[in-house]
Structure formats: C-alpha cells, structure tokens
Image 1 (tube, rainbow, N blue to C red):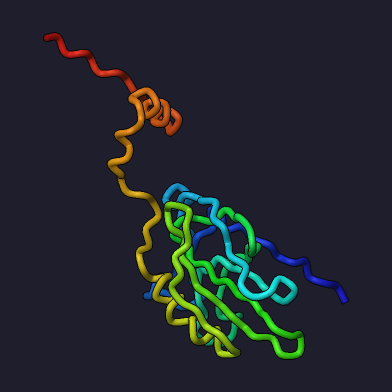
Image 2 (image 1 turned 180 degrees about the vertical axis):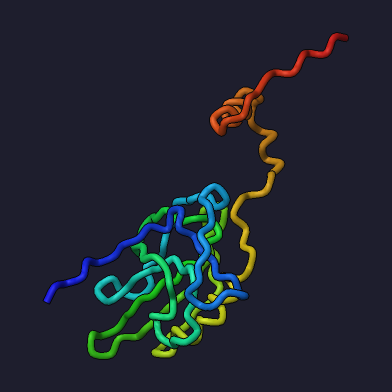
Length: 180
C-alpha cells in the first residue's frame, strides 16, 4: 500500500473566500497584492504534549459537523507564521490525560497591525459545530486587510517618507521651495 504524501500548504497568496451565492467547495483566489502577508504569533492552545494544530480557513463545508468541515492550509502553532492580513485562523489543542483529553478550539482573525482578534472559543467534543457559524460569518465579512492612514506619520522626516514611497515604487520629487 502506497502512502500519500502529506500536503502542506502556505497561506501566502492562497487566500480564498467563499461567495455565498456559489455552492460549497467553490473557491475564489484573491491576489496577494490585495492582502499583505504579515508575520503574526500563532498561539499554542492546550498542552504541547498533546494534539494541537492551526489552520488558515478558506471555506467551510456545512455538510460536515467535525473538524473536516474547515477547508484551508495548516500552519504551525506556538510561533510566528506568515499569514495574509484579514485571514481567519482556527487553532485547536488538547490538554489533560491521554485517555481523557480536554479539547479546546479558538477562532481568530489576523489584523493589519500583526495582532490576532479572538472571535470565538469552544470546548468539548462539539467544538467544530459550535464554531462553524462564527467562522462562516467571518469568512463572509469584509475584514480589514490594510492599516488606515494614521496621524503618527507626522513624526517621520520628509526624507524617511520619500525613501519609503520610493521603496514601494513611487516617483518622488521634492516640491519647489516657496519664494518669500
């Protein structure tokens, strides 16, 4: 019997959201330029000695009530991962004894400022169905992917701002000094 290779995926550039008008399983790929990739700390839920995982969720299969309902790419827990801004992240973990593990799962969204916002938590064997509606709502929401203009930019020098704009591909010229 041949073993299937373990499929690992990266959330970079593969951010998909389900259109409610489309059937489950129909996925739309969003360009990476619209969703910047951010280094974010993915928490470890439960005990590191037991089963734990995290997934960037792209779609939910409503015909399933288990963890298999969540379609997406696995990422590591307990460290920094590169994830697209606005992504929905599901983190699962177990604590307790091996014979009687206590299941815990949490749902987060990735903010443009490299933080996570928790939107739901479930414990016990019904965790997947408990969180399914929350995840579906988050996937259909228009989550922020870019930080808005902040007045804190005034503390930077003109040269620093011009350098950053040129790094992003803009042509920058210094305005003519006003004659008084």
